[in-house]
Image (cartoon, rainbow, N blue to C red; front, side, top):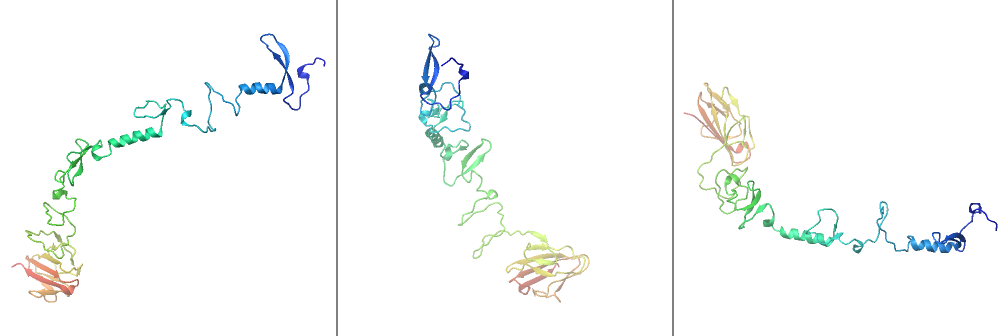
Length: 295
């Protein structure tokens, strides 16, 4: 065929393996025009290119795995030294990965050195005895084992534990809201010291047993009894000013000693009087009153 420029040749519809291409053989030595099939060229390219079935070693290359997946990575795929199997002594840099076994071995070793109370860094445990407790020592900044006496819990002012049921001993001041000794005796009581408060015109058995009423400057009427409880009593001190004063009490109660007229008692001018009410039930009818005036 006549010579024609390659650029002037017609385009092929599709390439087949037996199709020929022009090729220059040994261009840097003794160049010669030759022909080669598409199959020959493909074989050459596949021999030096990365394919799905090829084994290729990359050197000094960067692989971007962002939004990609690398699968089937195993321990033996890691570079020697990357997997740290002994983390008792580790690198100061983030350049190794600890193995699961190394982590477990290290943690177990740390727990084994501090698996009892005495091994903890903020405690000082010596000669442990029964019923001892820990008390914080702010001077040495540690918890120390102490007996109850050493911890000052044996004194009543620091009483925070339950007393023994059999023959308990209390010293100092024991504060309690209510003490029920039903069916038992309280022996050897030296003194019972009552709180003293002021009463109003409604005599309340839930208030202090000993009460006072302000100096009488006129006649008064005590209106009612509140919170009546069997076994409780109330003692009230009265004082009249310079004039005899009358005190009227609810009509439902009973009196001992000098019975009042229409439940009215008179407190002599400038004299003290004591009136006591003792309840033997929960109604006014079960209250016994007693009245006495200073001689």
